[in-house]
Length: 173
Image 1 (cartoon, rainbow, N blue to C red):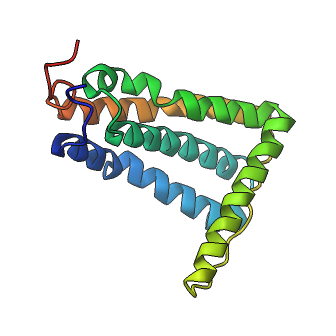
Image 2 (tube, rainbow, N blue to C red):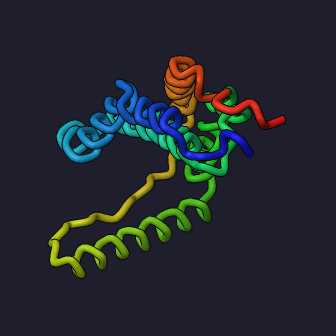
């Protein structure tokens, strides 16, 4: 498995993804939009902005996880990462918009994670206010799916800037 280990080049690539302007802008937009803008200016633009930011951020997070996963062959996967990383976020997003069962499952799953995080915080004596995730199913949100292209271009840019990452070992077939 040659390059299926966590090495400095892979960490550099992961850091480059997390520190990229697209990653940072997506985080800022998602937080500002969901915690401030939607309350002050509810409507079409703030709703779609959240969808775009979430799709971009989720695709970048998938790429980051794949880059640091030591069981993943960098040489084989990194060239395909701009195409592969958005698949799971887009699939989940589409399912949440069109399938009530997927929507209910997701709200239940995220509610469980929020409950667990609250429980852990309580054990450490930390007081936190965690709200529930609420998804409003809206098939018109699907127009934001092409936003993942922004993530794909960013992943391509980062992987291309680290050319040694895909070929850090020649012992694989």
